Length: 258
Image (cartoon, rainbow, N blue to C red; front, side, top):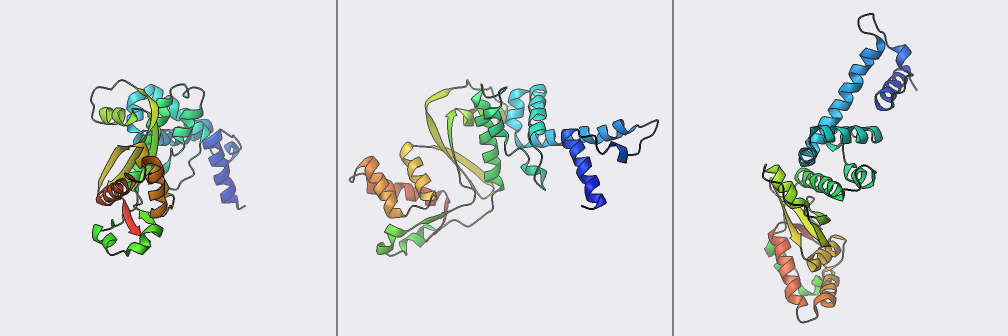
C-alpha cells in the first residue's frame, strides 16, 4: 500500500470509527489543535450523511421530528459506512436497520415507511424503456402463447405491507393531517411503477399479486393461466388472465414478450 493510500485509510478510519492512528500525521497549531481540525471533518462528514438520509427519507424525517431523526441517523451512520460513489444511495439498509434495532423494532410502521420511501425513490430513478404496444401481442401466433414470457419495465416494484403506510406517506408529504395508524388483518400487496416522469402505485388483490409475482419471476403465460385456474376455477380464469394482461399492458408495465 502506498503512503498516500495508507494515509487515506487512516483518515477514513478516524471519520468512520474514531480510530486515532492518523493523529500524529496531522499538523496542528496553538489556535487550531489536531483534535479540533480533525473534528471539523468528522462532524461535517456525519452531517452530510444525515442530510442524505433526510433527503432520501423526507416523510420519515417529518414523522420523527428533527431531534429523533438526528438520533436515528447517528445510530445508522455508526453502524453503516457509505459504500457508494454517489451519496444518493446512502441509506439503502435503513428499513432493515429499523426492523432489527432494539430501539425501533417495537414500532414496525417505521421500517415499512422507510421501505416504501426507498422503493418510491427507486421507481423514479429507474432506467426508462418503451412499453410494449398492445398490437404487438396481436401479432403473436396462438401456438406460442403458452410459452410466452414477459419482460418488465425497470421501474416496476412490489411491496407487501401490514400498515397503512402509503396513506401516511401521502398525507405527510402533502402536509395534511396524519392518519391514524392501522394494522391490517392480513398483509396487502402493492405495485409501484413509473410512466414517463410520473410515479404511480396501487394496491393489489391477492390473486393479482400472486400472478404478477409469478410473471415477474419468469413463469410463462400458460403456467400463469394454470395458477389462475387453481385460484378461480376453469370458468373464470381465462377472463381474469385477459383482464390482468390488459391492465399490465395499459399501465406500461410490460416492455417485451419472448
